[in-house]
Length: 503
Image (cartoon, rainbow, N blue to C red; front, top):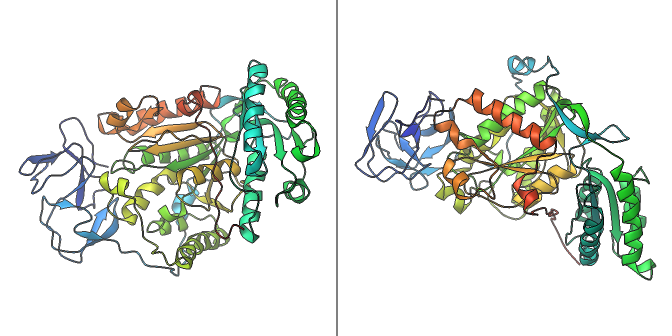
């Protein structure tokens, strides 16, 4: 990335790029520069949008991040605004891929070192939570309000003993068929097993498809001290019965105390939402640095949002640690493309209107920025819905880019913490601490009650090394108990993916 300071109007991400990104709104006719390069804007260039560094011929690839993000649909002059009006995606549908591992890069991550620690809750099974909460998980949406009332009552009684009691309501669990039914069960199983929950009350109606006789075999082995069950149709007063179970869970959870543990026990999920032209340059790139730092210390990271890998997937495939993992990545990508095709949708129908307003032009533009969150770490595994990580290192997780759904998927796969990058802002939070990382300072200053950390300082004179160290320190603080804005404001929700008929 070209060095920037307050005197520069533009930023060039890679030396081979033929476009630069505006660091401020540049008016038509204005002279703008980055280091020794100077040019005149032929049209208004909004903040975060691209300007041509040289003449570009019709049909020529537009290079950003050192990679093609599409091709020119007409001739483009030096100084022109480069966006959706003159650029089109290069993407196609299902593709064949060849295994070409980047062995030099993979080798850099083979040596692990233990360094940082945090204060976490070590569970009896050896897992570690960064919160000591009780979660109420409905098996079906019919008992959502029962769960909410029980959580409110329990918080009044036990707030001094634990980190809180939370009901995670949803609208699934009944009238679903086949894969959807199994996906709901897998997601709920994964949420129940997340180590941030010291205790879990599984709340059932009794007659739903996902009744306990059907769900318990899916859940498998569990600690009866940690997981309790209540079928509301089977008791006269479900509130009194629920309160008695919550008393047991609170007493059990309150015995657990924070202790020093290595960061190799951390699992961080990465997510981006409301992205802008700087997301891939600042916030996502900072996540990549943190990702690599944690993986090198033996920790685990999870990258999801499969549609936002399209166009950049080969950069992930070449980092697969084995041909078996490579095949899994290929299936991850192509199966999600087939999901689009099943509903007669174009594979590249992305980015969103808000993304385009923020300066993102094509899906390749978005994807190349999106996968920056994965850093350079080797890909060690591919996960399905609700599947827990098995290998330490960078894992890829199936799922959409939808903010609520993808964060729920991350929690169900074991993330104790999520880093959520955004250029336009979003108050949403998941059941686990959800660090909101802004790509620009303007958003950080405008929404201090949403945003936890500002990556915009990377284009204001701060170096990546300085900001990475500071941000990693902040992550350690959050893992050790410092609350994020989503926790302080009570923004903690789930949304379960479905694909199919509801009876």
